[in-house]
Image (cartoon, rainbow, N blue to C red; front, side, top):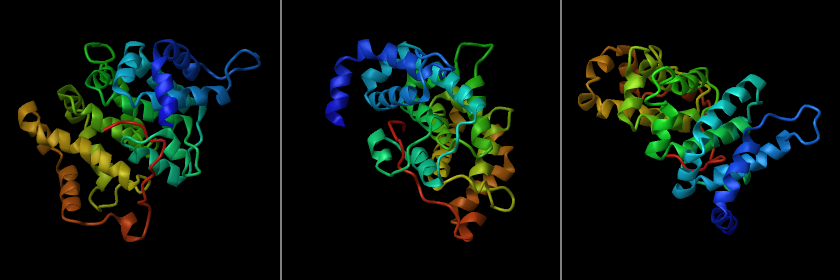
Length: 271
């Protein structure tokens, strides 16, 4: 609750390093002193809630929390973190500034992957956090994190990724990476709104499509200033899908009464 978060914020300087270590450590394999998944989750939950405060989030950035969370996310993917039920999955994607407690009130505990995405969403709401996510200035790995997140988004998993795309494209370099020759802009548009048949990715919830739309909007509104207009205009199929959505055309899944409800999830921070 608010009082608990306030007490922890007062001790953030001492709390953050051990919390980050515990949340990021691998689950113990036989050692009684090694952290288990049951101890990692509370540490991660505390970080998610504390990161709603910009000052605490800035302190986390100074401790390398963005890259730690990305490393954990890739580790979690390798472990095959079980996907939450559809209602819980929609909630994490929809969150903008709610608390972990509000998501738990839904009765569906968020997965560890969802909580990592919530933490990243809060941290990248800060410009410095978004820059760290994009690994700007690190020529050998610049954009690698974004590529990992796009891979997750395009295969229909970890819907909370959409909020990170919106945060990343608030920066010119984030828009450049999305609109560049990789074709990511078109892939995101068609996953969210459909290709030639308007079907899109039926596994994406309405909140995830809204967050994806925010990323696409960022790219389009700044295209003239960024010098990326020609690249965007090459994405004919993607632009057609976006225009159909603007005209109110429903996707195939929606016409059939398919998914759409948003999850208010473990939402913490984010834009």
